[in-house]
Amino acid sequence: MKHLLTALALLIAVPAQAAEKLTVALDWTPNTNHVGLYVAQAKGWFTDAGLDVEILPYTDTSSGTLVATGVAQFGILSAVGFHSQRSMGADMTAVMAVVQHETGRLVFNGEREDIQRPADLDGKIYAGFGSAWENALISSIIKHDGGEGRFDTVTLGTSAYEALANGSVDFTLEVSTWEGVNSELLGRPQRAFSYADYGVPDQHTTFLGGNSTWLAANADTASAFVQAAQRGYAFAADNPDAAADILIAETGGMLSNRDLVHASMQALVEGGFLRDPGEPVGLIDDSLVAGITGFLFDAGILRDANGDVLQTMPDVSGWTTNAYLAQ
Image (cartoon, rainbow, N blue to C red):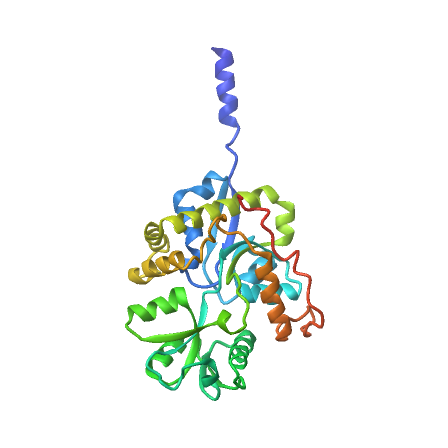
């Protein structure tokens, strides 16, 4: 009995191993691109992996900057922002493709008879968001169709969609699986030009990325986190309605439009954006990474650490990895 009591005392004295704390930054306010994180959190899959994960609220500081500086170990990253920051030497690596293909598109009022092809956009007014990518993208689309690639820009941010609806601008860009879905729910007729139809390479529009230095020093923890998140996105791909309900519940009232969340999830799944056939969720395609980087390089968007336009195409082989995914 004495030995048994001693053994019990020793067990009580040894604390349970504490869960490892991780933070993940969002690239925008919560939306369906983040669904896998919230599913993994709600299902306890991060906890099962020995992790205490905090999903940081969106701030004016980009998720890429938070990851590159080590404030967050992981972050949801817009692809163009990732490529731009990585070319400048940012300390981050993409470890999972959240969205497998381009969800963006150029949109305009569906009742406009004077816009039938991209060349018709010459001289029109574009409602923009203030990035160099937009100008290069739109000019390329118009020129590919035989136009001059000239248009006027007014920077409106998210107000662009109301401006398009009321006719004060002629066209804008949108994410088909969010703003595009919302326009349908609002009964706003739209037509669109897909980027890939006019010479722009397909891309993974959203990544999960990690701080490169941290990843190298914490490979096992990184794998545990990435695979729990991957499991969350796989659940969402198989159960879009249930995942939508989890996202709404986990974000504490930030997503009040339930119809939009559910319709967006359906669009992501039905459009094949979360998973390519025969492949695991999250797999990064090296050819897509190389293709869009080449486009950005040719457009003069990529810059070095000094802010100068890159003169040679960067080696992107170390920018992404599938090593942390469950294959």
